[in-house]
Length: 159
Image (cartoon, rainbow, N blue to C red; front, side, top):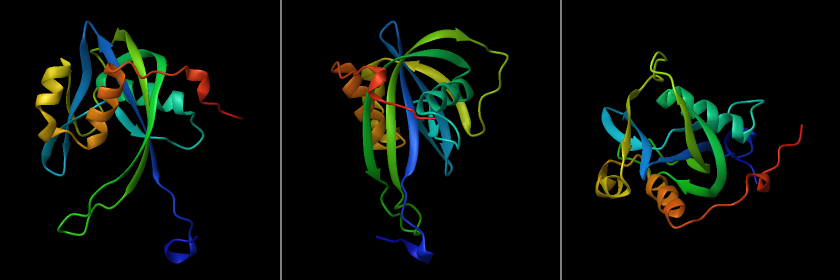
């Protein structure tokens, strides 16, 4: 099956980390389209990068935290709804990882668009569902909280 202009269709591949410490989840508040939304530390997989490297990099860039990946939470496919202005409609394939904090470096600058990194209880995050960047935010958190974790070696990178 082909996509416009003879190209093959490809989803946006993203990673996210569910970082937990003392029962609180590390989240980012970011400005997206003039709206402040909540998300896990997350972003796109870059060329020549493993999923693990992408998850560690995005967490560091968006929160100034170095983390250690502990488990694979899940893979999620989602199509963003088309907005009135015609934007949206993109397809995402997100790989979510569980992680634990290792070291915070407040001298680092947060990635562009990130307003702040903050720690929320699961109840606070769930109560703020109207501010979630997408339904993927709560789904990954809820799966983690329900004990859904797989070994990291489930995902293989072949060089």
